[in-house]
Length: 204
Image (cartoon, rainbow, N blue to C red; front, side):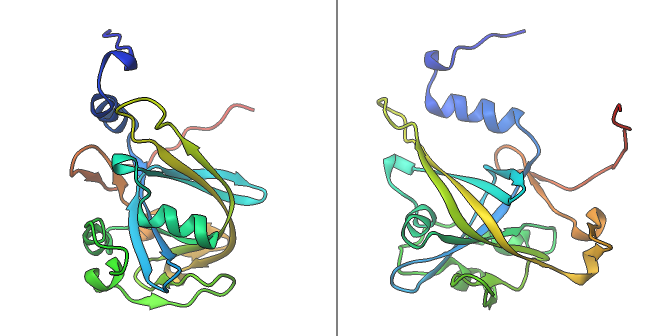
């Protein structure tokens, strides 16, 4: 067993250990809206469930060179965002939205994705996702960035105020994992499919 103290290596080396070992990670495609009305879209794999009562999800947005990304800035400003589950059908288009664009350009237009109005919030979603969740910001927590060489990040916790689920994956309140075909993030440029599904009965 190799033991490594994170303070003995660079932020990049710690990053490689984290994304290489915490796998697979679900991928969220997040849409936000700027004060100028530009709809921004970007994928994030620092993403998960926080609570089911009320339903809440979390997204961590890194700060490259200590600067806020468009997604983070827009969430701070509007307190709203839409989370979409990335699947095999839309991952190629959504990957294009990871490109670095100026704040006044929309990644959604670049990727050829189609906007769809939300019901409860002002931020639109995209039609190409089988699952989208309208979210209102509950808490935003700036993290790290206090030491030299640490860029920091912003952790956003949002309450889901509306679910939109494609009928093809939904039956009796449950989601068909095979029909959803969600993809997960590994390290580098690698993604993974669902693969084999197995069951283990939980102890009583």
